[in-house]
Image (cartoon, rainbow, N blue to C red; front, top):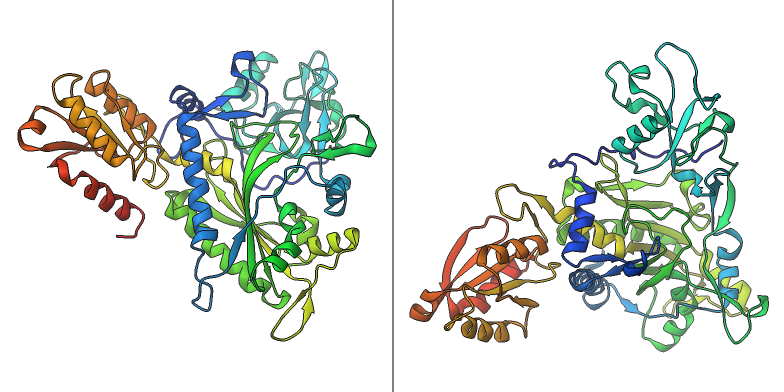
Amino acid sequence: MPQAPQKQQTMTDQTATTPATKDMKEIVALCKRRGFVFPASDIYGGLNGFWDFGPLGVELKNNLRDLWWKAMVTTPPLGPDGAPVEIVGVDSAIIQNPKAWVASGHVGGFSDPMVDDRETKLRYRADHLNYFFLRPLDGGIIKINGKPAKALAFVEGTSNQDIEKRLKKLGINLKFLSQDGKLPDLMFSSAEDIPLSEIVGPDASEPGTLTEPKQFNLMFHTFVGATAGDDNKAYLRPETAQGIFLNFKNVVDSSRVRVPFGIAQIGKAFRNEVTPRNFIFRSREFEQMEMEWFCHPNEAKMWRDFWFAERVKFWKAIGLSDDSLQLRDHDRDELSHYAKEGYGTADIEYKFPFTAPGFGELEGIAHRCDFDLKQHQEHSGTKLEYMDPVTNERFIPHVIEPAAGLTRGVLALLCEAYTPDAARPSGVYLNFHPSVAPKKAAILPLTAKDQHPVIATKLYMELREQYNVDLDIKQNIGKRYARQDEIGTPFCFTIDDQTSADQTLTVRHRNTMKQDRIGLDHVADYMRKNMLLATGRA
Protein backbone atom coordinates (compact mmCIF):
# COMPACT_ATOMS: atom_id res chain seq x y z
CA MET A 1 0.00 0.00 0.00
CA PRO A 2 1.83 3.18 -1.15
CA GLN A 3 2.31 5.76 1.57
CA ALA A 4 3.48 9.35 1.75
CA PRO A 5 7.13 9.42 2.84
CA GLN A 6 7.65 9.55 6.59
CA LYS A 7 9.42 12.90 7.10
CA GLN A 8 10.61 12.20 10.60
CA GLN A 9 10.46 9.79 13.48
CA THR A 10 7.12 10.19 15.25
CA MET A 11 7.39 7.43 17.82
CA THR A 12 8.08 8.25 21.44
CA ASP A 13 7.90 6.46 24.73
CA GLN A 14 5.33 8.63 26.50
CA THR A 15 5.59 6.81 29.82
CA ALA A 16 8.76 8.49 31.03
CA THR A 17 8.97 12.01 32.44
CA THR A 18 12.42 13.47 31.84
CA PRO A 19 13.67 16.92 30.89
CA ALA A 20 13.55 15.80 27.25
CA THR A 21 10.28 13.87 27.32
CA LYS A 22 7.15 14.99 29.12
CA ASP A 23 4.14 12.82 29.78
CA MET A 24 1.32 13.97 27.52
CA LYS A 25 -1.28 12.15 29.59
CA GLU A 26 -0.27 14.15 32.66
CA ILE A 27 -0.44 17.40 30.70
CA VAL A 28 -3.94 16.57 29.46
CA ALA A 29 -5.03 15.63 32.99
CA LEU A 30 -3.70 18.90 34.42
CA CYS A 31 -5.47 20.87 31.68
CA LYS A 32 -8.83 19.42 32.71
CA ARG A 33 -8.17 19.52 36.46
CA ARG A 34 -7.15 23.17 36.46
CA GLY A 35 -9.58 24.45 33.84
CA PHE A 36 -7.45 24.94 30.74
CA VAL A 37 -9.11 22.57 28.26
CA PHE A 38 -12.19 20.33 28.55
CA PRO A 39 -13.61 17.79 26.09
CA ALA A 40 -16.51 19.42 24.25
CA SER A 41 -19.93 18.11 25.37
CA ASP A 42 -18.12 16.41 28.24
CA ILE A 43 -21.29 15.43 30.15
CA TYR A 44 -22.45 13.53 27.05
CA GLY A 45 -19.19 11.69 26.60
CA GLY A 46 -17.53 14.30 24.39
CA LEU A 47 -17.27 14.56 20.61
CA ASN A 48 -14.04 13.45 18.98
CA GLY A 49 -12.04 16.32 17.54
CA PHE A 50 -13.78 19.12 19.45
CA TRP A 51 -12.58 20.87 22.61
CA ASP A 52 -13.73 23.62 24.97
CA PHE A 53 -11.35 26.09 26.61
CA GLY A 54 -11.99 26.59 30.32
CA PRO A 55 -11.50 29.69 32.47
CA LEU A 56 -7.69 29.54 32.39
CA GLY A 57 -7.44 28.15 28.88
CA VAL A 58 -9.39 31.01 27.37
CA GLU A 59 -7.13 33.52 29.16
CA LEU A 60 -4.02 31.74 27.85
CA LYS A 61 -5.46 31.62 24.33
CA ASN A 62 -6.53 35.25 24.41
CA ASN A 63 -3.08 36.31 25.65
CA LEU A 64 -1.42 34.53 22.73
CA ARG A 65 -3.99 35.93 20.30
CA ASP A 66 -3.49 39.49 21.54
CA LEU A 67 0.31 39.22 21.47
CA TRP A 68 0.18 37.98 17.87
CA TRP A 69 -2.18 40.79 16.85
CA LYS A 70 0.04 43.37 18.53
CA ALA A 71 3.18 41.97 16.87
CA MET A 72 1.54 41.86 13.44
CA VAL A 73 -1.01 44.70 13.30
CA THR A 74 -0.79 47.17 16.19
CA THR A 75 3.00 47.45 16.33
CA PRO A 76 4.27 45.52 13.28
CA PRO A 77 8.00 44.92 12.89
CA LEU A 78 10.49 47.18 11.18
CA GLY A 79 11.07 46.23 7.57
CA PRO A 80 14.39 45.93 5.74
CA ASP A 81 14.41 49.71 5.23
CA GLY A 82 14.08 50.40 8.96
CA ALA A 83 10.50 51.68 8.76
CA PRO A 84 7.50 49.81 10.25
CA VAL A 85 5.79 47.52 7.74
CA GLU A 86 2.10 48.12 7.06
CA ILE A 87 -0.45 45.49 8.12
CA VAL A 88 -4.21 45.92 8.56
CA GLY A 89 -6.77 43.49 9.91
CA VAL A 90 -10.06 41.96 8.75
CA ASP A 91 -12.61 39.60 10.25
CA SER A 92 -14.31 37.72 7.43
CA ALA A 93 -17.37 35.48 7.54
CA ILE A 94 -16.98 31.79 8.31
CA ILE A 95 -19.42 30.94 5.50
CA GLN A 96 -18.64 32.52 2.11
CA ASN A 97 -20.15 32.11 -1.35
CA PRO A 98 -19.39 28.48 -2.28
CA LYS A 99 -17.94 29.68 -5.60
CA ALA A 100 -15.00 31.02 -3.59
CA TRP A 101 -14.06 27.48 -2.55
CA VAL A 102 -14.34 26.25 -6.12
CA ALA A 103 -11.93 28.99 -7.22
CA SER A 104 -9.48 28.28 -4.39
CA GLY A 105 -9.36 24.60 -5.29
CA HIS A 106 -10.82 23.37 -2.02
CA VAL A 107 -14.00 21.85 -3.49
CA GLY A 108 -12.10 19.82 -6.05
CA GLY A 109 -8.81 19.20 -4.34
CA PHE A 110 -8.96 19.68 -0.56
CA SER A 111 -8.72 16.04 0.34
CA ASP A 112 -6.54 13.51 2.11
CA PRO A 113 -5.84 9.85 1.30
CA MET A 114 -8.00 7.71 3.59
CA VAL A 115 -7.81 4.04 4.48
CA ASP A 116 -10.83 2.11 5.74
CA ASP A 117 -10.73 -0.99 7.93
CA ARG A 118 -13.36 -3.49 6.82
CA GLU A 119 -13.27 -5.28 10.18
CA THR A 120 -13.56 -2.35 12.61
CA LYS A 121 -15.31 0.14 10.25
CA LEU A 122 -12.73 2.75 11.33
CA ARG A 123 -11.04 5.18 8.96
CA TYR A 124 -7.45 6.50 9.02
CA ARG A 125 -5.42 9.03 7.09
CA ALA A 126 -2.99 6.99 5.02
CA ASP A 127 -0.15 9.46 5.52
CA HIS A 128 -0.60 9.26 9.30
CA LEU A 129 -0.04 5.52 9.49
CA ASN A 130 3.35 4.08 10.43
CA TYR A 131 4.32 0.43 10.51
CA PHE A 132 6.05 -2.01 12.81
CA PHE A 133 7.62 -4.80 10.76
CA LEU A 134 6.98 -8.28 12.11
CA ARG A 135 10.30 -9.98 11.37
CA PRO A 136 11.04 -12.99 13.59
CA LEU A 137 14.67 -13.49 14.57
CA ASP A 138 14.58 -17.02 13.19
CA GLY A 139 13.55 -15.74 9.75
CA GLY A 140 10.15 -17.39 9.89
CA ILE A 141 6.70 -15.92 9.26
CA ILE A 142 4.28 -14.80 11.97
CA LYS A 143 0.68 -15.88 11.52
CA ILE A 144 -2.40 -14.33 13.15
CA ASN A 145 -5.62 -16.33 12.89
CA GLY A 146 -3.80 -18.54 10.40
CA LYS A 147 -2.93 -15.65 8.07
CA PRO A 148 0.62 -14.36 7.37
CA ALA A 149 1.30 -11.01 9.06
CA LYS A 150 4.36 -8.95 8.11
CA ALA A 151 3.51 -5.51 9.48
CA LEU A 152 1.43 -3.88 12.20
CA ALA A 153 -0.07 -0.50 11.26
CA PHE A 154 -0.44 2.20 13.92
CA VAL A 155 -1.37 5.88 13.98
CA GLU A 156 1.67 8.15 14.31
CA GLY A 157 2.15 9.39 17.85
CA THR A 158 1.25 6.00 19.36
CA SER A 159 3.52 5.25 22.32
CA ASN A 160 5.87 2.27 22.52
CA GLN A 161 3.84 1.04 25.49
CA ASP A 162 0.65 0.95 23.42
CA ILE A 163 2.45 -0.86 20.58
CA GLU A 164 3.60 -3.50 23.06
CA LYS A 165 0.03 -3.89 24.34
CA ARG A 166 -1.19 -4.42 20.76
CA LEU A 167 1.45 -7.08 20.14
CA LYS A 168 0.53 -8.88 23.36
CA LYS A 169 -3.18 -8.74 22.48
CA LEU A 170 -2.39 -10.29 19.10
CA GLY A 171 -0.38 -13.05 20.79
CA ILE A 172 3.03 -11.87 19.56
CA ASN A 173 5.93 -12.09 22.03
CA LEU A 174 8.61 -9.45 21.56
CA LYS A 175 11.36 -11.94 22.41
CA PHE A 176 10.75 -13.56 19.00
CA LEU A 177 11.37 -10.19 17.28
CA SER A 178 14.36 -8.69 19.10
CA GLN A 179 17.30 -9.89 21.16
CA ASP A 180 16.54 -7.66 24.14
CA GLY A 181 12.74 -7.92 23.98
CA LYS A 182 12.34 -4.22 23.19
CA LEU A 183 10.82 -2.45 20.22
CA PRO A 184 13.58 -1.89 17.64
CA ASP A 185 13.22 1.65 16.25
CA LEU A 186 14.56 0.61 12.86
CA MET A 187 11.36 -1.31 12.24
CA PHE A 188 9.12 1.79 12.23
CA SER A 189 8.82 2.80 8.59
CA SER A 190 6.70 2.75 5.43
CA ALA A 191 5.04 -0.51 4.40
CA GLU A 192 4.71 0.27 0.70
CA ASP A 193 6.30 -3.05 -0.33
CA ILE A 194 4.07 -5.21 1.85
CA PRO A 195 0.76 -6.54 0.44
CA LEU A 196 -2.39 -5.30 2.16
CA SER A 197 -3.28 -8.92 2.93
CA GLU A 198 -0.29 -9.09 5.29
CA ILE A 199 -0.83 -5.81 7.21
CA VAL A 200 -2.72 -5.72 10.52
CA GLY A 201 -4.77 -2.52 10.93
CA PRO A 202 -4.32 -0.28 14.01
CA ASP A 203 -7.40 -1.73 15.72
CA ALA A 204 -7.90 -4.96 13.79
CA SER A 205 -7.57 -8.52 15.10
CA GLU A 206 -6.19 -10.04 11.90
CA PRO A 207 -4.27 -9.00 8.76
CA GLY A 208 -5.84 -8.07 5.45
CA THR A 209 -8.68 -5.80 6.55
CA LEU A 210 -7.31 -2.42 5.33
CA THR A 211 -8.43 -0.98 1.99
CA GLU A 212 -6.44 0.90 -0.62
CA PRO A 213 -6.28 4.66 0.06
CA LYS A 214 -9.09 6.82 -1.33
CA GLN A 215 -9.37 10.60 -1.41
CA PHE A 216 -11.73 12.14 1.19
CA ASN A 217 -12.76 15.83 1.12
CA LEU A 218 -12.16 17.52 4.45
CA MET A 219 -14.67 20.38 4.24
CA PHE A 220 -17.75 20.53 6.41
CA HIS A 221 -20.81 21.49 4.38
CA THR A 222 -24.08 23.08 5.41
CA PHE A 223 -27.12 24.63 3.71
CA VAL A 224 -28.09 28.28 3.56
CA GLY A 225 -31.83 28.93 3.67
CA ALA A 226 -34.94 26.90 4.38
CA THR A 227 -34.25 23.93 2.11
CA ALA A 228 -31.40 21.49 1.76
CA GLY A 229 -30.08 20.88 -1.73
CA ASP A 230 -27.17 21.46 -4.08
CA ASP A 231 -28.50 24.91 -5.01
CA ASN A 232 -27.98 26.27 -1.49
CA LYS A 233 -25.07 24.15 -0.33
CA ALA A 234 -22.30 26.05 1.46
CA TYR A 235 -19.16 25.23 3.41
CA LEU A 236 -17.59 26.09 6.75
CA ARG A 237 -14.24 27.62 5.89
CA PRO A 238 -11.27 25.20 6.13
CA GLU A 239 -8.85 28.14 6.42
CA THR A 240 -9.08 31.86 7.12
CA ALA A 241 -6.82 32.88 4.22
CA GLN A 242 -9.48 32.96 1.51
CA GLY A 243 -11.51 35.59 3.39
CA ILE A 244 -8.43 37.81 3.15
CA PHE A 245 -8.02 37.28 -0.60
CA LEU A 246 -11.72 37.95 -1.19
CA ASN A 247 -11.30 41.32 0.55
CA PHE A 248 -8.05 42.35 -1.17
CA LYS A 249 -9.76 44.86 -3.48
CA ASN A 250 -12.03 46.18 -0.71
CA VAL A 251 -9.02 46.86 1.52
CA VAL A 252 -6.99 48.53 -1.23
CA ASP A 253 -9.97 50.71 -2.25
CA SER A 254 -10.99 51.69 1.29
CA SER A 255 -7.65 51.95 3.11
CA ARG A 256 -4.52 53.95 2.47
CA VAL A 257 -2.33 50.91 1.89
CA ARG A 258 0.28 50.37 -0.79
CA VAL A 259 2.09 47.23 -1.85
CA PRO A 260 3.98 45.83 0.00
CA PHE A 261 1.45 45.48 2.80
CA GLY A 262 -0.29 42.76 4.77
CA ILE A 263 -3.79 41.77 5.79
CA ALA A 264 -4.13 39.78 9.02
CA GLN A 265 -6.96 37.72 10.44
CA ILE A 266 -7.60 35.52 13.47
CA GLY A 267 -10.54 33.16 13.42
CA LYS A 268 -12.08 29.71 13.49
CA ALA A 269 -11.57 27.14 10.77
CA PHE A 270 -13.10 23.69 10.35
CA ARG A 271 -11.75 20.51 8.83
CA ASN A 272 -13.44 17.15 8.93
CA GLU A 273 -10.32 15.33 10.08
CA VAL A 274 -10.86 11.60 9.99
CA THR A 275 -8.38 10.88 12.76
CA PRO A 276 -8.16 13.90 15.09
CA ARG A 277 -5.52 13.14 17.70
CA ASN A 278 -2.89 14.31 20.14
CA PHE A 279 -5.20 16.44 22.26
CA ILE A 280 -5.78 19.85 20.62
CA PHE A 281 -2.93 19.42 18.11
CA ARG A 282 -5.20 18.13 15.35
CA SER A 283 -8.89 18.82 15.84
CA ARG A 284 -11.93 19.45 13.66
CA GLU A 285 -12.57 22.95 14.96
CA PHE A 286 -9.56 25.17 15.58
CA GLU A 287 -8.33 28.75 15.35
CA GLN A 288 -5.78 30.22 13.01
CA MET A 289 -3.66 33.38 13.04
CA GLU A 290 -2.87 34.17 9.41
CA MET A 291 -1.35 37.11 7.57
CA GLU A 292 -1.15 37.49 3.80
CA TRP A 293 1.74 39.74 2.77
CA PHE A 294 1.19 41.23 -0.70
CA CYS A 295 4.39 42.22 -2.50
CA HIS A 296 5.91 42.72 -5.94
CA PRO A 297 6.91 39.36 -7.51
CA ASN A 298 10.54 40.48 -7.68
CA GLU A 299 10.64 40.98 -3.89
CA ALA A 300 8.96 37.72 -2.86
CA LYS A 301 12.12 35.91 -1.74
CA MET A 302 13.32 38.87 0.30
CA TRP A 303 10.01 39.09 2.15
CA ARG A 304 9.86 35.32 2.60
CA ASP A 305 13.22 35.38 4.38
CA PHE A 306 12.13 38.44 6.38
CA TRP A 307 9.01 36.73 7.72
CA PHE A 308 10.91 33.54 8.55
CA ALA A 309 13.14 35.51 10.89
CA GLU A 310 10.32 37.57 12.40
CA ARG A 311 8.06 34.63 13.16
CA VAL A 312 10.81 32.57 14.83
CA LYS A 313 11.66 35.65 16.89
CA PHE A 314 8.02 35.92 18.02
CA TRP A 315 7.75 32.36 19.35
CA LYS A 316 11.03 32.68 21.23
CA ALA A 317 9.94 36.00 22.75
CA ILE A 318 6.89 34.42 24.38
CA GLY A 319 8.78 31.52 25.93
CA LEU A 320 9.45 28.70 23.47
CA SER A 321 13.05 27.52 23.80
CA ASP A 322 15.68 27.26 21.07
CA ASP A 323 15.99 23.51 21.61
CA SER A 324 12.26 23.02 21.07
CA LEU A 325 12.04 24.92 17.77
CA GLN A 326 13.33 24.22 14.29
CA LEU A 327 12.74 25.57 10.79
CA ARG A 328 12.17 22.90 8.13
CA ASP A 329 11.78 23.45 4.39
CA HIS A 330 9.09 21.38 2.72
CA ASP A 331 10.25 18.75 0.30
CA ARG A 332 8.94 19.02 -3.26
CA ASP A 333 6.32 16.32 -2.71
CA GLU A 334 4.92 18.19 0.32
CA LEU A 335 4.34 21.52 -1.40
CA SER A 336 0.81 22.81 -1.89
CA HIS A 337 -0.32 23.51 -5.45
CA TYR A 338 0.07 27.27 -4.96
CA ALA A 339 3.71 26.98 -3.78
CA LYS A 340 5.17 24.62 -6.38
CA GLU A 341 6.32 27.37 -8.75
CA GLY A 342 7.59 29.74 -6.07
CA TYR A 343 10.11 29.65 -3.27
CA GLY A 344 8.20 26.95 -1.44
CA THR A 345 7.13 26.61 2.17
CA ALA A 346 8.95 26.17 5.44
CA ASP A 347 7.44 25.18 8.77
CA ILE A 348 8.36 26.46 12.18
CA GLU A 349 8.15 23.21 14.12
CA TYR A 350 7.94 22.54 17.85
CA LYS A 351 9.12 19.44 19.70
CA PHE A 352 5.82 18.27 21.20
CA PRO A 353 5.91 15.36 23.67
CA PHE A 354 4.05 13.16 21.16
CA THR A 355 6.54 13.93 18.36
CA ALA A 356 9.77 13.84 20.40
CA PRO A 357 12.53 13.39 19.48
CA GLY A 358 11.01 14.77 16.26
CA PHE A 359 9.01 17.93 15.69
CA GLY A 360 5.46 18.88 14.66
CA GLU A 361 4.17 21.85 12.69
CA LEU A 362 3.46 25.04 14.63
CA GLU A 363 3.44 27.64 11.87
CA GLY A 364 3.97 27.58 8.13
CA ILE A 365 5.48 30.38 6.03
CA ALA A 366 4.52 29.87 2.39
CA HIS A 367 5.14 31.67 -0.87
CA ARG A 368 1.66 31.39 -2.38
CA CYS A 369 2.80 33.16 -5.57
CA ASP A 370 -0.11 34.94 -7.30
CA PHE A 371 -2.28 31.81 -7.36
CA ASP A 372 -5.16 32.94 -5.14
CA LEU A 373 -5.74 36.40 -6.56
CA LYS A 374 -5.52 35.04 -10.12
CA GLN A 375 -8.03 32.30 -9.34
CA HIS A 376 -10.52 34.68 -7.76
CA GLN A 377 -10.06 37.17 -10.60
CA GLU A 378 -10.79 34.47 -13.17
CA HIS A 379 -13.79 32.97 -11.37
CA SER A 380 -15.41 36.21 -10.19
CA GLY A 381 -14.68 38.37 -13.23
CA THR A 382 -13.41 41.14 -10.91
CA LYS A 383 -10.04 42.70 -11.70
CA LEU A 384 -7.65 42.12 -8.80
CA GLU A 385 -4.56 43.71 -10.30
CA TYR A 386 -2.68 46.32 -8.31
CA MET A 387 -1.42 49.51 -9.91
CA ASP A 388 1.69 51.03 -8.42
CA PRO A 389 0.90 54.77 -8.03
CA VAL A 390 4.58 55.67 -8.47
CA THR A 391 5.54 53.59 -11.49
CA ASN A 392 2.03 53.00 -12.93
CA GLU A 393 2.96 49.33 -13.26
CA ARG A 394 0.05 46.91 -13.09
CA PHE A 395 0.61 43.47 -11.59
CA ILE A 396 -1.01 40.81 -9.47
CA PRO A 397 0.94 40.75 -6.18
CA HIS A 398 2.69 37.67 -4.94
CA VAL A 399 1.84 36.55 -1.42
CA ILE A 400 3.97 35.45 1.51
CA GLU A 401 1.80 33.78 4.13
CA PRO A 402 2.83 33.28 7.77
CA ALA A 403 0.02 31.04 9.02
CA ALA A 404 0.07 29.91 12.64
CA GLY A 405 -2.31 27.71 14.57
CA LEU A 406 -3.61 29.61 17.59
CA THR A 407 -4.82 26.33 19.10
CA ARG A 408 -1.49 24.63 18.40
CA GLY A 409 0.30 27.66 19.83
CA VAL A 410 -1.62 27.20 23.09
CA LEU A 411 -0.61 23.53 23.14
CA ALA A 412 3.06 24.42 22.55
CA LEU A 413 2.96 26.93 25.41
CA LEU A 414 1.39 24.34 27.73
CA CYS A 415 3.94 21.67 26.79
CA GLU A 416 6.87 24.08 27.12
CA ALA A 417 5.66 25.35 30.50
CA TYR A 418 4.93 21.93 32.02
CA THR A 419 7.76 21.32 34.50
CA PRO A 420 7.74 18.31 36.84
CA ASP A 421 9.34 19.14 40.21
CA ALA A 422 9.26 16.60 43.01
CA ALA A 423 10.60 19.21 45.44
CA ARG A 424 7.31 21.09 45.67
CA PRO A 425 3.90 19.97 47.01
CA SER A 426 2.18 20.24 43.62
CA GLY A 427 4.83 18.02 42.00
CA VAL A 428 4.72 20.27 38.95
CA TYR A 429 4.57 23.90 37.93
CA LEU A 430 3.79 25.68 34.68
CA ASN A 431 6.72 27.86 33.72
CA PHE A 432 4.74 30.30 31.58
CA HIS A 433 6.39 33.42 30.25
CA PRO A 434 4.70 36.24 32.21
CA SER A 435 3.32 37.72 28.98
CA VAL A 436 1.15 34.63 28.34
CA ALA A 437 0.46 33.47 31.91
CA PRO A 438 -3.33 33.42 32.52
CA LYS A 439 -2.86 35.01 35.95
CA LYS A 440 -0.01 37.47 36.39
CA ALA A 441 -0.08 37.37 40.18
CA ALA A 442 -2.04 35.98 43.13
CA ILE A 443 -2.99 37.99 46.22
CA LEU A 444 -3.04 35.63 49.20
CA PRO A 445 -4.07 36.66 52.74
CA LEU A 446 -2.33 34.26 55.10
CA THR A 447 -5.60 33.71 56.97
CA ALA A 448 -9.24 34.62 56.38
CA LYS A 449 -9.48 36.67 59.56
CA ASP A 450 -8.39 39.99 61.07
CA GLN A 451 -7.01 42.50 58.57
CA HIS A 452 -5.50 39.93 56.20
CA PRO A 453 -8.43 39.71 53.73
CA VAL A 454 -9.15 43.44 54.03
CA ILE A 455 -5.63 44.44 52.96
CA ALA A 456 -5.56 41.71 50.31
CA THR A 457 -8.83 42.86 48.77
CA LYS A 458 -7.66 46.47 48.66
CA LEU A 459 -4.43 45.43 46.88
CA TYR A 460 -6.38 43.23 44.48
CA MET A 461 -8.68 46.13 43.54
CA GLU A 462 -5.63 48.28 42.79
CA LEU A 463 -3.80 45.72 40.67
CA ARG A 464 -6.75 44.36 38.68
CA GLU A 465 -6.99 47.57 36.66
CA GLN A 466 -3.61 46.75 35.09
CA TYR A 467 -3.18 42.98 35.39
CA ASN A 468 -5.24 39.82 35.51
CA VAL A 469 -4.65 38.90 39.16
CA ASP A 470 -6.22 36.29 41.41
CA LEU A 471 -7.56 36.95 44.90
CA ASP A 472 -7.46 33.60 46.71
CA ILE A 473 -8.54 33.56 50.36
CA LYS A 474 -9.60 29.99 51.16
CA GLN A 475 -7.52 26.89 52.13
CA ASN A 476 -4.13 26.81 53.84
CA ILE A 477 -1.33 28.79 52.26
CA GLY A 478 0.59 25.70 51.09
CA LYS A 479 -2.35 24.44 49.04
CA ARG A 480 -2.86 27.87 47.54
CA TYR A 481 0.79 28.07 46.55
CA ALA A 482 0.46 24.63 44.97
CA ARG A 483 -2.57 25.72 42.97
CA GLN A 484 -0.83 28.84 41.70
CA ASP A 485 2.18 26.73 40.70
CA GLU A 486 -0.07 24.40 38.69
CA ILE A 487 -1.74 27.26 36.83
CA GLY A 488 1.55 29.04 36.17
CA THR A 489 1.16 32.26 38.17
CA PRO A 490 4.57 34.03 38.19
CA PHE A 491 4.19 35.86 41.55
CA CYS A 492 2.29 35.33 44.82
CA PHE A 493 1.91 38.26 47.22
CA THR A 494 1.12 37.08 50.75
CA ILE A 495 -0.36 39.34 53.44
CA ASP A 496 0.44 38.29 57.03
CA ASP A 497 0.50 39.75 60.56
CA GLN A 498 3.65 41.74 59.78
CA THR A 499 1.83 43.52 56.94
CA SER A 500 -0.39 45.40 59.38
CA ALA A 501 2.61 46.33 61.50
CA ASP A 502 5.08 47.62 58.89
CA GLN A 503 3.13 47.67 55.57
CA THR A 504 5.28 44.97 53.95
CA LEU A 505 4.35 41.64 52.40
CA THR A 506 6.00 38.53 51.02
CA VAL A 507 6.45 37.97 47.29
CA ARG A 508 7.02 34.35 46.27
CA HIS A 509 8.60 33.57 42.89
CA ARG A 510 7.02 30.64 41.05
CA ASN A 511 10.10 29.07 39.48
CA THR A 512 12.51 29.28 42.42
CA MET A 513 10.00 29.43 45.33
CA LYS A 514 12.25 32.18 46.69
CA GLN A 515 10.51 34.69 48.96
CA ASP A 516 11.33 38.39 49.32
CA ARG A 517 9.88 41.09 51.53
CA ILE A 518 8.76 44.30 49.81
CA GLY A 519 6.67 47.30 50.73
CA LEU A 520 2.91 47.10 50.21
CA ASP A 521 3.00 50.38 48.29
CA HIS A 522 5.73 49.01 45.97
CA VAL A 523 3.74 46.04 44.62
CA ALA A 524 2.43 47.81 41.50
CA ASP A 525 5.92 49.05 40.61
CA TYR A 526 7.37 45.60 41.34
CA MET A 527 4.85 44.01 38.97
CA ARG A 528 5.50 46.61 36.28
CA LYS A 529 9.27 46.22 36.51
CA ASN A 530 9.22 42.42 36.44
CA MET A 531 6.71 42.25 33.59
CA LEU A 532 8.90 44.60 31.54
CA LEU A 533 12.00 42.55 32.35
CA ALA A 534 10.19 39.39 31.26
CA THR A 535 9.17 40.93 27.95
CA GLY A 536 12.59 42.45 27.30
CA ARG A 537 11.33 46.04 27.41
CA ALA A 538 12.94 47.20 30.67
